[in-house]
Image 1: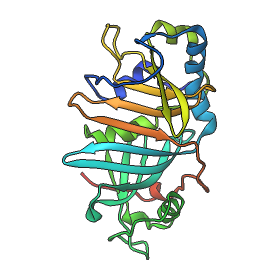
Image 2 (image 1 turned 90 degrees about the vertical axis):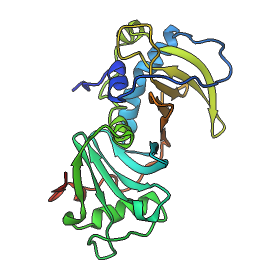
Image 3 (image 1 turned 180 degrees about the horizontal axis):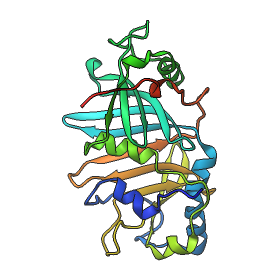
Image 4 (image 1 turned 60 degrees about the horizontal axis):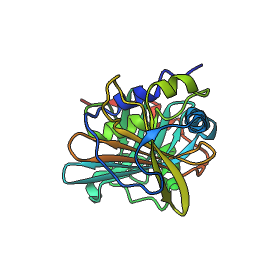
Length: 251
C-alpha cells in the first residue's frame, strides 16, 4: 500500500515555518533537479523502506540543550525504540514511539521504574527495552515540542513503493550541491516546499548515488535545527513489542 506521506507532506509534519542557509560544496547555486536526480530522489523513500529496520541518530533542540536519540526504526511497523540522553543523568532513559505518540521508561535492573545506567550500545538499549515491565513505560501523545517533531519525522522517511518522478519534479525540489559525511560524497536536495509558493523548503536531504538516504535536516523557525542521521546499520533483533504492552498514559 502506498504511504500517505508525500515529499511536501514531510515538510508539513516538520512543523516549521522558516529555513536557514547552509554551505555545501561542488554544485554552485541551487537548481532544479536533472531527470536522473529526480528518478533517484523518487526512489529514496522506497530504498529506506527496503533497508528498514535501521539505526538512526537524532539530534533535537531542547531549552538550554540538545536531546540525542539513538534508536532502531522499523518503517514497516511504524515503530521505533532507543535511548535518549540530554546530558543530564536525571533526564535520560529508554524511548519508544509510533505514529500516535511516545513512551519513556527509566527502569531499574529488575524492570521497575527508576534510574537507568547509560547502555553501552544501542543493541543493549533495545534489549533493555524488551525486558522493561509494561508499567514502567509512561505514554503520551505528540505535542509541539521539537523532540516530538523529530520523532515523527523519523517515521515518515519511507514508502512501500517509489514516488512518482513526474509529480516529484513538478513539486519543486532543488539540488543544493554536494557534501561529504564520513568520507563519502552525497548530493544535497531540498524537499518540495509544503505549499505551492516560492518559499524554500524547511527540509534538506543527503542522498547517495544509489538513492539511499544518509541525513535529513529540518530547519525550525527559531534558528534551531533537527538532524536525523541514518547510519544504515542493522540492530538485532529489531524493535521489540514490549513498549506497546500495557501502556500507561500520562497527561
